[in-house]
Image (cartoon, rainbow, N blue to C red):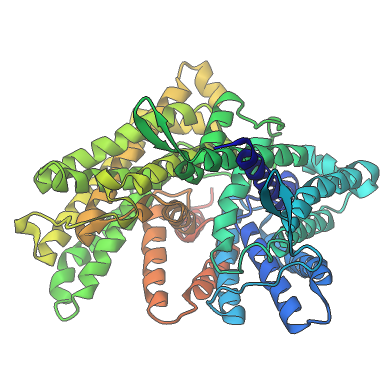
Length: 631
């Protein structure tokens, strides 16, 4: 460690901050005006790299410096098309269903890139005129990275001029504060949203295109950048462009300092700060949200007046519902006998049951409690690792490990929930993501205890459950019992109090309900049942890996809940079964299964914005209304 090394790392941080700012500024702009949490923004960044590579390699006469802005314009135009064809149709839908649509776009765009550009990494040329390096205190620093250091402040200045010196910029700032009022004043909201989305996509494409000389184009770039971009947007303040710039600098420089520190001996204990780069940005986000819930330069979100259709009250099960449940349970009991010639059916059904319980536990806090979570996989993974470590490290019998799993999941939710219930909306969701990533990083790097990135193997059920059918019946019994308990809780006084706090927190508080305490308990209950699902998953697979705590697992849970319908109790089960089954069938049918799955999800979102089970419930309500006698 020396001063020259620190200076070079800080400059590296500035270069990375500029690229991160370009992506984050577009994401913040889109959210500020349209209120869409755009998961597909990373896909536009990825396409910017691919389009720039194609222009440089196929049209060599064009040159790198012309290819970069053209690539940004192409991606911006693609963003306009996406907004007009897909997103414009669902602006009146609840915000979470808009999120589901952008997730579907991620799947479609990823496979489109796979088809167009292939699976291999594509390394672009160096930027003409900036191929060399400059000497800084005896160390070489790439000239192109110095160029990137300048780009970030330059784009920030241009955006400031656009938003403060033009009529369109004034409309954008007004829409960020109150988009409904802007529409009431006669502004064409549709075209304003389209222009904003196009500009956001253009910025993401520009950020991607400028990365071409630094890293090869690959199909993982979208997910690699979107997490960091979300962190920057939330830390800076949703909708704040200067906040995004400050947050990008803060996050990038902290990671640069961690790399510079490397391995440090503190009181005889060696600490690898370089490994902290995996989680540093999420630690920053967690600290900022706990201390300043609206971000460094953000402000409290204004009330949104268009939230889609009001939720119908949850009703106790009627006879047709109970009959349908009985038929399904009888079918599940008879499945091993009926599918004796196809053992895979039992294996797949175990996966479906585990997914159903995981989704139901997430729905418990998202639907009735009204708290959105992007990090629910943390409790699933804690339960899975608790079971695996109990069996492998502590020598516990499987039965004891199954008991320990929900306790560990509940303990994790108890800690996380204590911080999270103080926030609401997207800030709460992002804080759950931050804590989940911190847990994931700990598991991923603790090689001696958790097995690190390799995970743990040999996590097998007890001898009396080695036969797959026996384990199937255990899973079926535990999942059905868990679903029944979750449902009973929702119809208990606690469940009614929880829904009252969701629908009207001020009134609930006025009549003496402790809304935050109820939400905290809901977190703990959901974490416990997610832990049960994680333990069942670990024993069904015989192994466990950090993937069980990853963001992708949390996103899968979100998709399951939203696909089935967040406003019904059967929605998460229907969504989990539909999504998991579609995923399995399509993955075995074609190499482009993501695009097919994404297209199906998009169609379902456009046709049934209330979810599959929600649509079925709506039909039943209409039928019940039509059959009532007219008085």
